Length: 251
Image 1 (tube, rainbow, N blue to C red):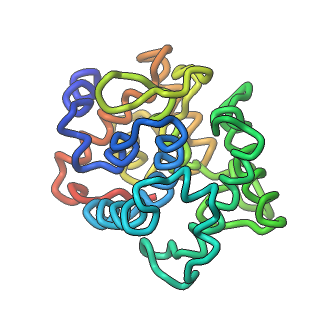
Image 2: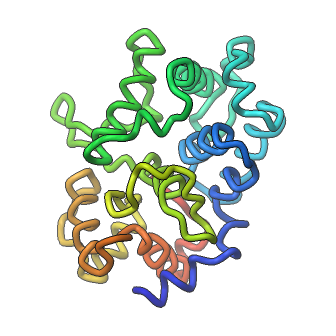
Image 3: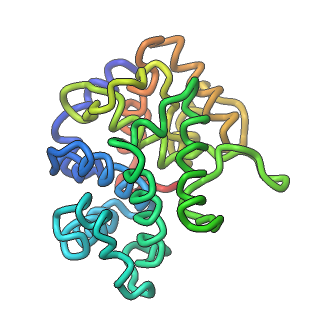
């Protein structure tokens, strides 16, 4: 596992991964906004994700994400414009409305996520977005709590964003947030990571939900207590080496 983690935790990884988008910015608020929005569209065909990200951060946001959010330019756009698969301009407006609400009271998004555990931070962030949108929820932000008989979500996208922002390896993950320790992070769980983890004997549970994330992360924490999610690279790498998952990220 350590060998695979080191192999794929390299600069070459960046050019074909959505993490390239926050790498393209230097101002903290730009970086965290882009990391969040890039994680939201990180599902489906990898090439499509990159094309959609280029359109969102370039032609739509004009390469100035924080200004775009705070000036409310999203409120004037046609909500029916498609950005990525089932993610439309109205969905971007929902998220930007939430971000402006957060930045109106906080210097950084990081303040919302600081909590005793990752799930509490994710729930606080999700709640802030809902409050900013007059109680409306969005399917693009998963619920870390069980709701109406549904199990608590794995929250793959936000856990991936947290990996990018909190874990600093000097290569792929940016680590601009310093108040959330990497040892507290949870593995970003998609169907491929889950399948490979089961094949390796790291998982037995069939569901891909919050409980499964906690179980897998606990296994990985035994290998590296201070940095369990570094094995996200190893699990990704094992998947890449199989032809059927070379070009996919699926949530």
